[in-house]
Amino acid sequence: MTGTGYARSQRGEEEKKEEGKEAQEAVPEQKRVEKKKVPPKGPPQVAMVDASHLGGFVNIDATDQIAGRLCSKVAKLILGGKRVTVVNAERALISGARNSVIRQWMERLEISSRVNPIYGPIHPRRPDTILRRMVRGMVPRRKPKGAAAMKRLRIYIGVPEEMKAMNFGRFEDAQATRPIPVYITVKELSKNLGWSG
Image 1 (cartoon, helix red, strand yellow):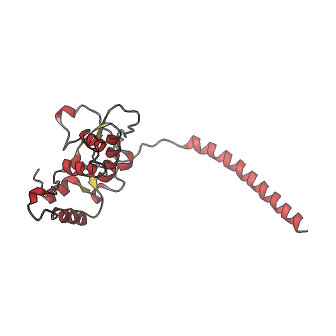
Image 2 (image 1 turned 90 degrees about the horizontal axis):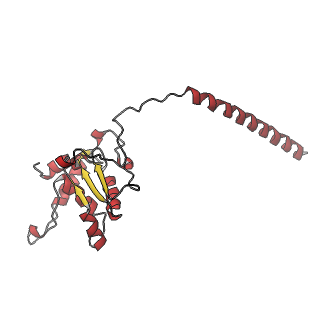
Image 3 (image 1 turned 60 degrees about the vertical axis):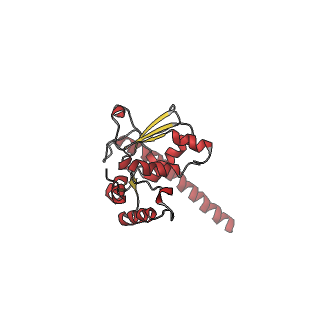
């Protein structure tokens, strides 16, 4: 007795599923016709970097890119044998509360040699050297392949005159997701660390 009721309920569910599928198949056809392409709001689209098909050179604009994510991508590229040029280093962003980021970097400046500060560590203060140090921390710099990789990296403040005509890409996953005022720029951090530029 339970078998027949169960079988009837199964048939009823199957019929409902078939009716639902037919209705779903008809609806997307109507939606596809009605959709219009609306241009996205916000900053203009910029070429994103896909380095797999590029030759030996990659040019990157660091504007509105998260510094840590940008540097990890750059480190991977230079270890892979690419020559990477990064411009607008001062416009890269560091996430976190502005005061706490500055305080942490100021605490790092207090680390020095007891004997003579010239023995190091030497702390970077310029935007380009800050990014270079970030990349250096992601590369095995004491091994020959890491030392060779660091020689393939060029980082500039602003855009040099000879590079103004070049096209620069960006990394899609390093793009800032929150509003820009939430972040602190590397330039602002450098000014607080004592950079006079």
